[in-house]
Length: 578
Image (tube, rainbow, N blue to C red; front, side, top):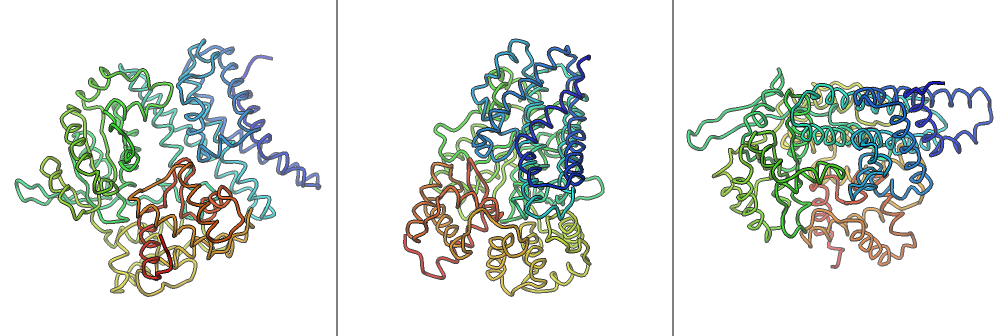
């Protein structure tokens, strides 16, 4: 029988999914026809995904024996992960991160290197790994709920994973004539990790408030004050202005400072801009660096090191200083430095000097810096070199658009309607003097919508709104979804643990902690509260069932405003000693 790539990929996907989860699922099904229906549904879902992987092999024009080698190596490597899934959990249940972590030294399996199949393997492995990451949680939840959602969730995963594979293949095919093959490969590697990160965010059953960026993003209004002419110019969506914005910040390689209040969507805009460049002609890439990730860096990274980081482990060594210099001089790179406001005050002068040096070192490349408004003078210094853009609050059409998108795509309570009179709701909130200042920012608008959906009404006052949001997210799975947790933790205890964590971050002027730093904090809090649960189980419970804490690997609150509320609440209550 001749080798068939599609058949081999299907058997690999089926083996991976069933080894990871389906066997124990099917053991509990005694009715033959129901068992057969479940098996067929899983098979059809896997087939829908792997169908989109075949073009990767065709585009590489490799032999049947090489295709077979890639598929068999994926099977062997992933089999190890399934038997000991700690590496998967340590990689945030993300196939691309599983790949990066497993091959952190850049050395892929010897057989792959011998046949010079590194690029194909780096494309295929993360996509197959995502079957391991995405299917078992969905099937486990499906089992607990007695199959009440039918097969909808498997269909969602299949459609998303196959859609991502198709997008990446289109990027590779469209740019295949590029003269700079290394930049093309870096672009493909970056596109894969960005697409999976964005698309899979809304498929995680353990995040009741996750919505994929593509479905919920409403383009904000930006206004530019040109200091030399005292002229206000605005960029507005919709009506095709997204492309104009990519041109403004990407093609023109502008040096820009984007300032917006808390929750206005600065980081989301950065992610959207990076993704949008993949759809543009020409091989250009956007390198996003979250400044809070550099707080402990000594020395701060060079432009080469930042580009090597986004290139992935097996391309890192090929990104030479000479190559980076060429890409910058040709204007093929845009650097985004996100979150200057998240730097401790005593480090801002150091970072300011580093940004100043980067400004002169990147040639014709673009440079975008984002920040909240600051009480210090650092932004005034930056605005002397950078065009200053203001992120403005949502106007009424944007508020209505966001409400409609949220109700269409947010994971809502089972059996609840997905339609609402968005126009009436937007007008009601805008006419309310208490809510009017809140409704214009994406974070607060999402908070309003979640609380309104849970309770049908909103409490008075911003502090009460945040309190209800936090309480709702801590109890939403247990009290509304009815899915039993692996461990039992009282809501009061969860609140105290998160408050202690927020206080620690605030007092130490940190934005995030790694695994080795956060577990002792949780352990200390549990000991003080006479709780016998283990820190790792508590931490995973908070991540999986609240949507307020993001991890593993690097742990932070879903947004800085949530941590700030918990700190303010602790100060008002006066019941914490540190």
